[in-house]
Amino acid sequence: MTNYLPDQPVISQEALAILGDGKIAYIKEIRSEDVPALFPQAPALAPGLQLFALHAADGTPIMLTDSREAAVANAWSNELETVSVH
Image (tube, rainbow, N blue to C red; front, side, top):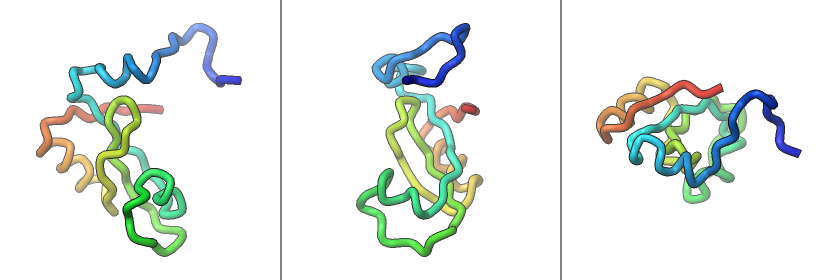
């Protein structure tokens, strides 16, 4: 069962992929334990680290860093507009 509010529209991954013509991204705080699922090529990390992942609008992970500022800078340098998601 999908958790969403009945009065909120549901948007498909395909629609998210073309949102902003590929120029929209978001930053998500994650723990190092979540890294292998999102970034399988990343080296092993110590558990309990707070990290930040930059994702395309469709959820595709783009980059991983240890600071929010670095994620914002990477988005900016790649001409991506970051948006807030909840």
